[in-house]
Length: 382
Ligand SMILES: Cc1ncc(COP(=O)(O)O)c(C=O)c1O
Image (tube, rainbow, N blue to C red; front, side):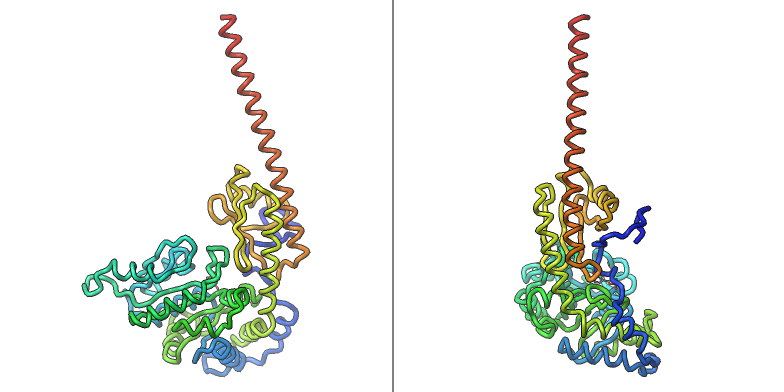
């Protein structure tokens, strides 16, 4: 691992997208008998789509190259150009994909600012009633967009009861509900909820193979048959119609059949890391509920960016999150033993940095006192 000049083994906690295929997954890819998916002849793609549709209790599924393309194809397939989509401001669709949603998805986002990324009935009611819906001037709100888990809120699980209430509300309002479920299996494992239970609250949803499930590529888009037929068309338009994608579908199939249990390990490791970091009072740890934690380093008088550089020098790779907040994500990249090592390296680093900043403060105080004393002397002798 090479990171800003350090060329030694690092414990990489930047993201769960950094995993590499396991030997079993590589074998599944290497031995896949592929066909051309443009002709509907790749049996691994067909098997993956059928497996996922069944797993999530939806009528149909479509293999997509990435979560971003799946989101944009979903927008095009569920809305008319110019429609309004209600989402939380922190969701990937707004935070990272606002330009794509305008340009490719062709919608206008109505981002709601919640404290924790969990949209409520009140949020929806306000978002819709703050508009004169009967007036042709305004964009038509036709879609509610939910993310589960909420990646910018340390992998928070969207509560099923809240989601079901939103779903009922959408039905009454004749609006669709979509789940960006890049990490929905983390929510299922974390809350012990069947995937089909979450999926039944939504008209359509996605799930990524390339996050904690450890595949190198791909997402699945799921929903009704007509929706998937429209999505297949837009996937082609967006350049996502692939040919021998069975090699990747084989990896994805291996991931969903073999790696869901790994997510539970990742959650335990995130909780373990949070526990170790809490031993250091200068870290303010906001434990996530799944495979991410976010902690504040402001008490060390450092920005997140400075702390991330210091941690990298200790061979622990983290992600700068907000001004003073740092994110760590667990995955199959990092086992329990490495988590313990990473936690202790970070705690020791914080202690050293704190001693350093106390010494600096002492020196600054000494200089200030000496200067003051000198000025007094000058006054006395002057
Ligand atoms: C919630 C969520 N949705 C969508 C995406 C986009 O996935 P991809 O990187 O495969 O385009 C991500 C990526 O991290 C994500 O966290």
